[in-house]
Length: 288
Image 1 (tube, rainbow, N blue to C red):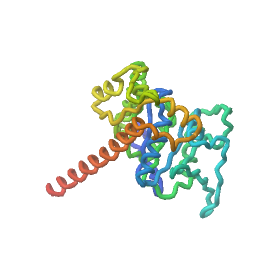
Image 2: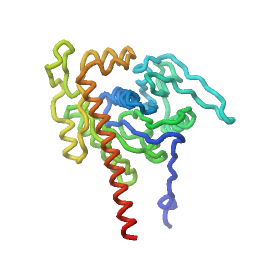
Image 3: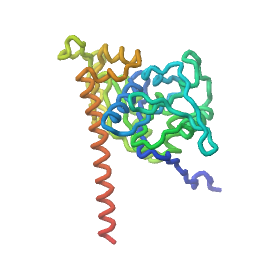
Image 4: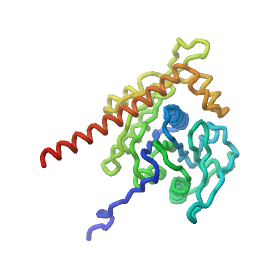
């Protein structure tokens, strides 16, 4: 007797009012996913796009710290008989995180189903309004959070974050394989090499490769995915992130260039994708 589940078609949820949803992911922790996700959201907002940022790292949310929103609690409102959570708005970005509902020192001891249900509730109940982009910062690994997002939501594409360290590559490769799985099929828009080098603020022309070199390029060649940005680390980045002064992130010109390259890579990739779809559609029409 055939398994009924083999023929079950999953109906993915389209977020009302959200045009594109981008996942920021990596198989490894400590590579700066949250900083890159926040910087990407800030870059998009600076170009006039309406942007939301969802912190989907249930066990280790970082977004409240990045936006200086620790110990803040969002307000709720009733709309058409349903309770809606009002996201915080910082630097033109609508921000939501599980960190707004728990104490910063509180451990989240939840099993997979509860994590998935909480994630769906935050996504569905948040009053996002109309967004050009919703950026989702995901936790390390390839677990329940990723499965929930990929199986149940329409995802436009993913950004893969790595560091130059070779030790990070094996974990990051697993994340790439997850998105390229035939049952997932979410396009990877590009690879970002974070912490590519260290440049002291007083000596910006100097580069110190504290974590090695070539990790992003190695992944790019192995999987035929473009390396769209290399973002350095400086002491000013660390301070602005720790103090929640995300608006100071682009004061460093090399960091600013890294995020500009990231934004250009995403917008270029989307343009290519649209052109490809249009070309295929035209070929079908010509054949008819």
